[in-house]
Length: 112
Image (cartoon, one colour):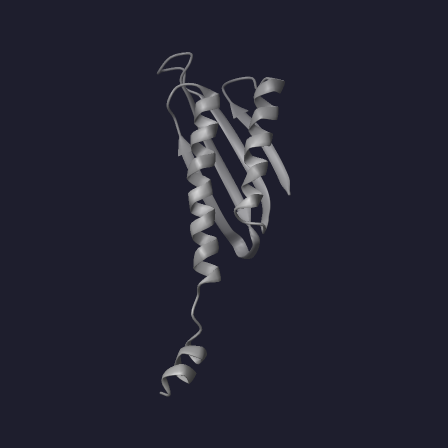
């Protein structure tokens, strides 16, 4: 799995970069077919110095993409919120794949 941390209009400190990498690397616990995770940090100059927007893009097998945005205050808080949103998206996707009913099996059971 490849993790890319990039930024717009700001410099990413090493502490922020390691925090982002550690948080998003835990997403493989929810869906193990993740190929790449991209974290984009953006500082909005119009809204103030401390206002940061974070976008996390997860690329998985079979061209599945999962995206989360959060733009409220501190960069660390935004990363946590994006990871929480992606945890829900990935676990829902995994449940959908795991619990999929195949039409052939349902016809065999009902006798149609």
